[in-house]
Every structure is written in C-alpha cells, then in structure tokens.
Image 1 (tube, one colour):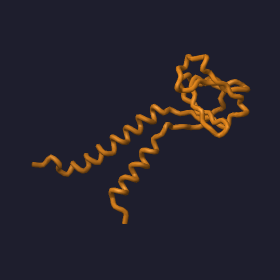
Image 2 (image 1 turned 180 degrees about the vertical axis):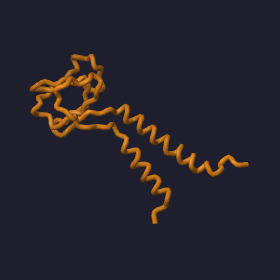
Image 3 (image 1 turned 90 degrees about the vertical axis):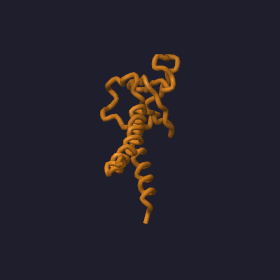
Image 4 (image 1 turned 60 degrees about the vertical axis):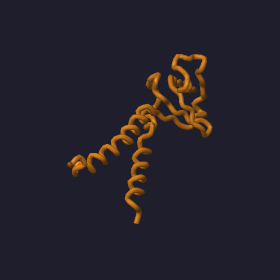
Length: 122
C-alpha cells in the first residue's frame, strides 16, 4: 500500500509538469506573419533554438534569440528552411503563471476542504 502522502506528492508533481510553455506545432503553414513577441522554438540539427521576431520566407527562417530585444537587427540569425527539422510556438510566461496558479491553488483547495470541517471551532 502506498502512503497517502506519497500519492499526494506524485499527483502534485504530475499536475505541475502539465503546465509548461504550451509548445505546439503551428496549425497552418507559415504563410501568415508571426507576431514579433511570439516565442518560436526552431529545431535545427537536433537542438532547439528559441527565437522571437521570426520572419519566414520561401527559402529561409530568420529570428532573434529570445534573450535579445526584438529590435536588435544585428542579432538576427537566418537558417535555410531545408535545415529546419520542426517549428513550435509557445508562451513560457503564460506557462509560468499557470504553474504558479496550480502550486498555490492545490494547497489552498486542500486547506479549504480540510478546514471546512471546523478548523476555527472554539
């Protein structure tokens, strides 16, 4: 029999890992302009590059590292489309806040349920 505290801890970890950056494949081909602040994960030669201010042309993909400002034109990097394995869009900031909400909401809900039986009784 697994102790209830272990089951709670495992469930808590599983819930918090589900709140990542929400990386997803673009539903449409990249014919529409990508919003400048949209974070894009470019998989190239088996490694992930995280860019924003991404521009897609028929033969190349250019972008700026997400650690640099979007108006840094000297920071822009280009890759031929033929060398890009895949592209994913994500929102790490929203993922962070979802994780914070889960980390706060679960203990608060637990305390609410636990204390609804009379934590404050005299």
